[in-house]
Image (cartoon, rainbow, N blue to C red; front, side, top):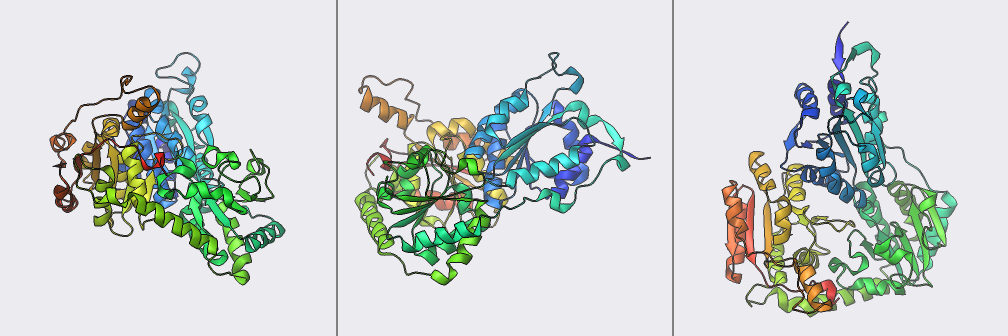
Length: 538
């Protein structure tokens, strides 16, 4: 009888699931997966840090709607990836996080790189398992793939003990999952509740729809946009650590407390003021959609709860609203006028030739060369916030740092975007501090022939913290706020990428065009003024 290893069963199951590239960093405990993956026809994209691999898998999940896969070694490999996993968790991104592990007989005895990996990652993922046998791996992969997509999408984890990967079992002893085993099940809301929700929205004078990250992606996003047109209401994505004060909203967040009906497809967390004032008004009627009843009214009582997954419930709402289409509301026009006025207030900064360059001047120059559908990674930090102001509402596929509020994801996001969407251009907005997190991933992009452009806003410091310290503690009380005006473009060139250095406004567009035309990973290092983000005043 023929036998097969646990690693081969794992690789075959991932292939059957139709996963994309496996983002990884090598380690002894996962070498069997690499070897088996070659036979299964899997693609591996190896990074320079495990956190970057997790960020790339996160971006893949957001852009494709299918779980991205991150594979790292045990112990320090596992812990290094945790920030990327937590970012995906807060961004509602489907991700399968695979880690090597100590041999099962050594668990609890102080085995090599043995830590409680399931216990460590459990609070920042939907489910976490340790594989206990080779034979169970196909079914476990199918279950993980399905779980990552069901309800609110998010990361799942499997620890892969080394002996499980190496163990040989008889082919006949392993069951091959059916295609349906990999796919999510869908939960519909009560039809009466759906009808009541549509009635509330139809009668509202100032309705708004606030959707979490997953509500705006894929089929859910298509149905959400259709619903907005049917009910004539404005809709906004809630996916930033700044919540309703995010620059991409252009100051509209402070108007949401005036809404009389709020359709909430997002958790009642800090980004929406926990569902209450001052973010939303006490008199606002709230209709909340969530996959589990426990999430309904978690921090604020709601007027109506719809229990079901967002794509399914949105489809129900669209069908129920089809016969009740209403014209674009005057409230929606009012908000558009407020947005336009706020944009006008900062418009001079987008064209000023003052030196050092205003960050909005840089972001506007990039916006002018982008095409509809281009992928833009918006990292955290002040420079990223200026980019969010410049690009908010534009026809681009944006990847933000998410509710976790971390920095450093911009370059990994852009690399994954370039792989997932090879027919469009990928650009990352990152600060000079952010470059220090994953600048070495330019090497990854060079090795894998991935073309993207990183625009570095260089103000020689940690701008957000510098501004806060100066404001709160005084200008002579700055600690850990300054960096050197490093030539990151030269670092990129040393790694084999294209590099540009910009100090003057007339240099911006030519540098961007050369970088985009290079067909290589590129870094444009731009000397900018250190100016507080637009959320400070809008």
